[in-house]
Length: 213
Image 1 (cartoon, helix red, strand yellow):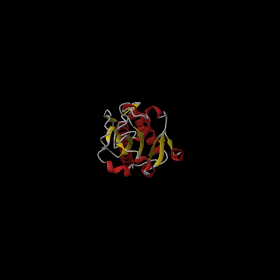
Image 2 (cartoon, helix red, strand yellow):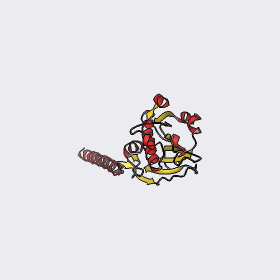
Image 3 (cartoon, helix red, strand yellow):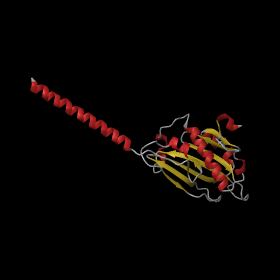
Image 4 (tube, one colour):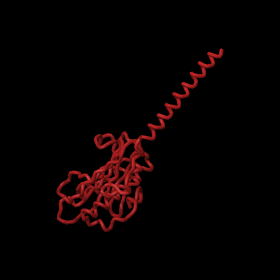
């Protein structure tokens, strides 16, 4: 009887030790996962780090960012990269491309998402992408005098077709994307000396019905 109780006691102690070790291992593993830390300004200082931090994962990898100094080349319609921001398995990119004013009047913007407006610059926003269209007439005799500024989020930059697989918040994320598009638009308008630059207001853009007025 006494031997049985002793064996039972040793078994309980051993099980308890395994539970404690496994629990401690789980705590150790959870706390060694790197926390994503972003600076106050990202994308060469163009974007606020606050909405980027809200979109990217909180843990799982270090923050990485790239930046390309913007160049004025309205003869080139191919999209150019302004910057990319990555952490764990998520990424955000900001790009710009030259276009014509017919884009603004073709209904293209309205079909892409929720109407967006930053001063006189129209655009659209959604949980995965936002864009603004800027008048950029300097110099005035260019073929493509409008600048489309786009911010897009991806699962990662190597799988740009996987935007649909990202979990999104349909209420929060379009607001964050719109804020990033506005930041990028103001920065590019100033850097490329777009004639609309002095008239772009500070703060978040107008979303929804008010953006169409």
